[in-house]
Length: 171
Image 1 (cartoon, rainbow, N blue to C red):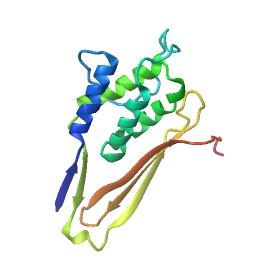
Image 2: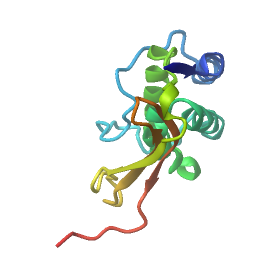
Image 3: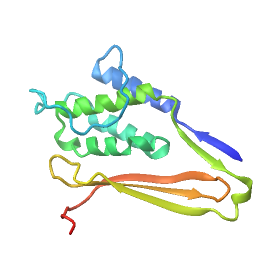
């Protein structure tokens, strides 16, 4: 079995450095989850945000699409608000960076077993959060495409998260 570990530690550190400078914080905390849904409302939530949202979201998208697939949904949620960025979104973005700060060494491991080169299969997994968007009640669908082999090979090829265009009750 051959294992390959891909990470973007240097890039993640540079993103965190830019965020800390932009947010004007001396020390960034650590969050156990990148989840940005269901934040407790605060009085200043509707005020215009102060962070450079496009720069930070763009950097996080690159990181999430490359090696940090667990960030896709959280970054997707914050990206919905780039044109109407608020203090609430500043707090959400801070949560993502706190999670990134605590998991800086995380990456993506791929495993290839010697006997699997002729028998690899593509598997696609799909999940949805069932009406998880508080504003529209639409679901976010997440997909992950992998190659899997009978001898233990496994590698993620792609992952995505996207809010569904419409919602309807199932019957």
